[in-house]
Structures are given as C-alpha cells and as structure tokens.
Amino acid sequence: MDPMSSYSWLVFALGTVVTWGLYGIFLHMGQVGMADPVNGRYKAFLFVGVAYFLTAVLAPLAILLLRGSDWSFPGKGLWLSLFAGILGAIGAFFVLLALGAAIAGKVQNAPGVVMSIVFAGAPIVNAVVSISMAHDWGKVRWPFILGLVMAAAGGFLVTKFKPVHAAPAKPIEKVAAAPAAPDSQQENDSRSL
Image 1: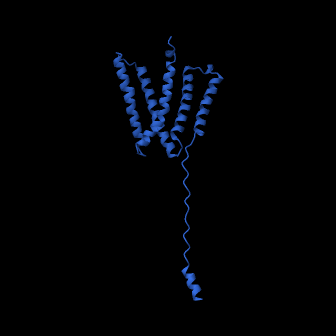
Image 2: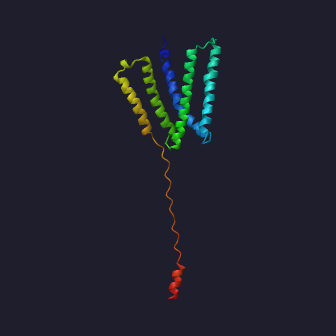
Image 3: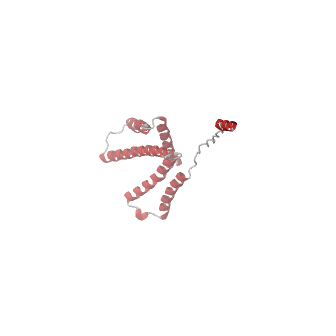
C-alpha cells in the first residue's frame, strides 16, 4: 500500500483546517469591504452563495460529467445532502451575524474570537451527536470526556487571552493657559482712589 494514500485523509483534513481557519477572517474582511454598515453582511453572504455555486454546484457537475456518472439521486441521499448544505449555509450566516454583533459590541479581534468559539465548539457538537446516533455512550472512556473538556477549555482560553492590538494612546492635549487679561475695572477703580 502506498504510504501517501493511507495519509491522504489527513492531508485533506488539514486542507479543511486551513481553508476553514481562513474562512472567518476573509468573511469578515469581505463584510467590511462592502463599506455598508447596515447591509454589508448580507452582501458578503450573497457572494458566499455565489462561491458555493461555483465550487459546490458547477465543479461537481463537471466532475460527474467527466466521469460519466448516472444521474440517479436516491431520495435519502438527496434530502440528507440538501439538509447538510442548508446547515452549512445557516452556519455561515450565523458566523456573519456573530461577526457583526462582535464588532458592534467592540470586541477586539472579532474574527479571532468568533472563529475560536466556532472551531472549538463544532468538534464537541460533532462528537456528541455522532456518539448519540451510534448509541455508543456505553463505550465512552474518560480520555474522550477529557478531550471534550479540553476542547471547550481551549476555545475559552484562546478567546479570553487572545493578544489584543492596543490602539496607540492619544497624546494628552495640553490646554495653553490664556494670558490673564488685566482687569480693566480693577485698574479703573484703583486709579479713581
């Protein structure tokens, strides 16, 4: 067996880590780049949809055509795949809403905070749901539970103790004292004495 083929799953998984890790950063930059504080996130989400269409509709269609695939789509696979896509799209939309709310709340490094929570929490949800669906809770050992706790703690720690780029301190403006104007009334009073 070719050693690389046995690790191809890991290469693809790491590719997903990199692309999804960059996803939140570029999504935020796209939202800001729309220069529309009211509708910028919806405009950015529209182009996320265009990107999904290009990469998740046109590309698979081309591959299926090149491979001479049949065009049968069993109902179960069709509906579950459609539901998975809807979950992904809703998740992308929630990321945009979270970024907008974090920025409005003046959270420093909003993309880093939001995506740290997402990427620490998503594996926990995945693990709990997968084990529940397989009815494998009786097979769970303590290192698995420790892993869940560590994932949650890691997300918390990355969010709580992220480096914050402090804005440069504004110089304190010195108010120049205006020279005291002679009190002409006082002068007049003293002359009259």
